[in-house]
Image (cartoon, rainbow, N blue to C red; front, side, top):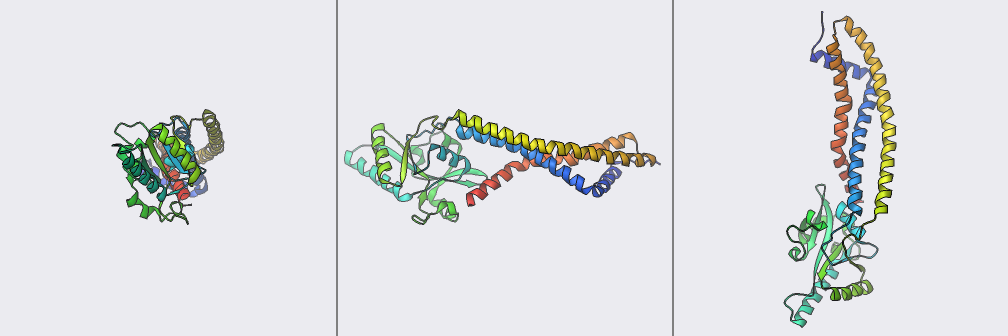
Length: 305
């Protein structure tokens, strides 16, 4: 009597998986980690390239917390995590100064414009809470780094953000920004830069395209990433191969018995294919698709910390 068919093949697979649970679990886990490591390496490589690639800022001056830099600003925009804070009072003081100078000089347009910003993470992507008029800074078809980031109103977001430890300080409470963007003429901006650096808790940076470029850093980080990835694969691949060899040996023992009760070669091939799909392809695919979720979750933990 010939015993074949998909129900019988699946039942045999489940019985054998229960008998060799540790081996099956190890193979499933190694396959998952294989897919996760492969996709994570790709994501991290893209992150490194974005972090150190030339940047079109689209602004003239950035006022940031002391100890931070344009590189810190770029990291914050990529991760949604501010690396320092300044008081909203500084932004309001600048706004008052702009209004006062415009009134005294009877100019139709101010000598410079200011926009406060605070990056944060929401639904796995970076958003920026802004204080001021974004239309003075960002236009349609803008190719600067800001064009790909969603802008929200600071007043609407600050209550939610103030519940996170990285968005509140003992001195200023939740009335904080990460920085202030400035656009204006060169001579007033240089005076403003000098004043900010000398008299406030912030530091002003003249922004230029490519200021964050560092080819040597990119090469070093990518080399370290490739080395780390190779070490992971060197650990996983032997485990996968050894698990398949042991599983193959046990499978051959089962086939000897099943041939006697009517299994044909086609059923054996279906059984092998089922093992490959369930124990390698599915967990590997799960590793690939869960990689972005896990990386975002880790990033979220860092934000809370």
